Length: 132
Length: 132
DNA sequence: CAACTTGTTGCGAACAGTTCTCATTTGCAT
DNA sequence: ATGCAAATGAGAACTGTTCGCAACAAGTTG
Ligand SMILES: [Mn+2]
Ligand SMILES: [Mn+2]
Ligand SMILES: [Zn+2]
Ligand SMILES: [Zn+2]
Image: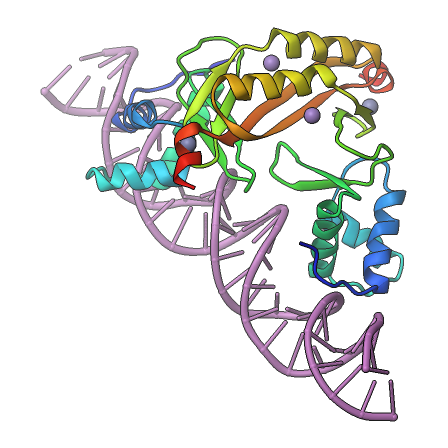
C-alpha cells in the first residue's frame, strides 16, 4: 500500500505551511508563500507533497468552483465536511450524520454500492457580509 | 439580468446533443460527437452554449473528479442532486429535503449567508457491479 | 565515515481544459 | 433590403497540473 518514503525538509515545509494556512489553499499559493519566506522549494514538489498529505489522510482536499485543487490540514480526524467562506476562506468543519444516513439510504434504494459523496457548503461569513 | 439572445442552429444543436447524451458529458466530447455527425460547430461555441444552458437552468453541471466540467440535460426541473455510476455514467436525479434543510440550518448556525451547496453521490450501479 | 542504492527534487517542457481575441458572419428589428 | 449588435470559429493565450530527466541526497550497508 504505502511504499518507502524519505523525510525531506521540503515535505515538512509543506506540512508546516499548510498547518499555518487559515483555510483551504492551493498548491500555487502555498508555493508562493514558501518562496516568499525564503524557501527554494520547487512548485512540482509542493504539488507532490500536497497529494501525498491528502493520500495519507493528513489533509483534506476539495475542488474550488474554479477547478483548482485546494488543501487543508484539518483538526477533526475522520470523515467530515466543510462550510467555507467565499470571501475570506474561513472554514468550519462539520459533522453530518443526517447526510451520511441519507447518502447510504439513497444509494441502497437505487441498488448502488461503494457510495462516495461530495458534500461542501459555501457561503459568506458574518464578517465578510458586513464588508460588502 | 438576461440580455438579448439570438437563436442560432448551433445553440439548438448543443441542446439536442446534450439531450441525447445518456449521462453527464463534457464540452469536448459533445463537440466530437457533433463534428462526427457532420456539424461544423466550433469548440468555443459548444463551451459557450453549455454555459448558457447551465445558467438558464436547462442543464445541470458538476465537476468531475478530474476537474472537467460536465453537463446534463435534466428531466426534473428545479433544484436537485445526482447519484452517478462511476462505471457507466448512469445518473439518477435525487430530491433531498433533508439535505437542503441541513445545509440551511448549519449555514445559519455559523452565521453564514448566501449558502450554496455541492452534493453529489457516486457509486457502482447494480449492472456495473455484476460485471466486476 | 565512505560507498551505494534509490527515492526525491527542481526545472522546463508538455498536457488538459477553458477562455479570450478578433475578423467575419448572421439573427432580427426596422 | 439595410444596419447593427450578438454570435461564431479558429487559433492564440491562460490556468492548473503532470511529466521527463539529470542532479541530488536520505538512509542503509560495510
Ligand atoms: Mn459525509
Ligand atoms: Mn440541494
Ligand atoms: Zn469570510
Ligand atoms: Zn453503472
